[in-house]
Length: 175
Ligand SMILES: Cc1cc2nc3c(=O)[nH]c(=O)nc-3n(C[C@H](O)[C@H](O)[C@H](O)COP(=O)(O)OP(=O)(O)OC[C@H]3O[C@@H](n4cnc5c(N)ncnc54)[C@H](O)[C@@H]3O)c2cc1C
Image (cartoon, rainbow, N blue to C red; front, side):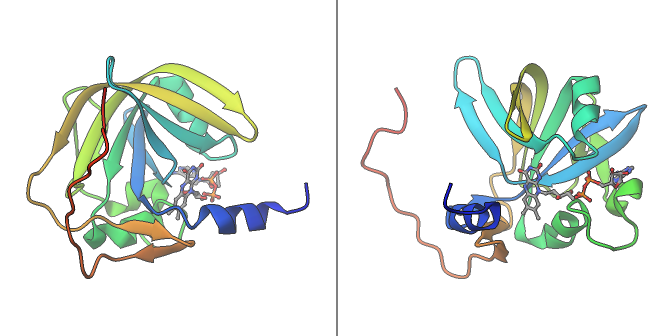
């Protein structure tokens, strides 16, 4: 390899993503971590994938609980994105960043104000490189039709949508 991991991260940073907090439960207590490695995997059945570094505190907790939720953040939730990524703030992650939350229909913690949520049961785990890929079967989901703009991640910084235009896609998006 003629490049280091920092260069890899820099190049991948050109792929704009949303920002999520992946949550789970440990002994009834909510746990969370900021994640952008989220992908839709299958429509029938509905499956998603999140990639968690095996060194993250939450990775063994998702293994143990067999459940996780994906909370898609709006731009008003940047402080939560920082806190759940380990920023030195109070209250910190050990106090769930002081975030308001409620259990979803499957019991997993859902963040108030998230612009979309997916509650998942782990149906597969694929260790690869330094990450575990968790495949989640989506058992419940929610989104508000009217919501704040999403928080975006681009070139290792947050990106805010100041000007947006919605353009129809001509290519086939399914089937
Ligand atoms: C926009 C963005 C996207 C990201 N996407 C991803 C991604 O897709 N996948 C990924 O793996 N990472 C991702 N990260 C990184 C991840 O969110 C942070 O690196 C991580 O939360 C920082 O944790 P850490 O390095 O302190 O290690 P951690 O392993 O999370 O924590 C270090 C130590 O702190 C202690 N600790 C931390 N939190 C708690 C807690 N709640 N309770 C008890 N002890 C605790 C534990 O002792 C732990 O060993 C992303 C970060 C950002 C900002």
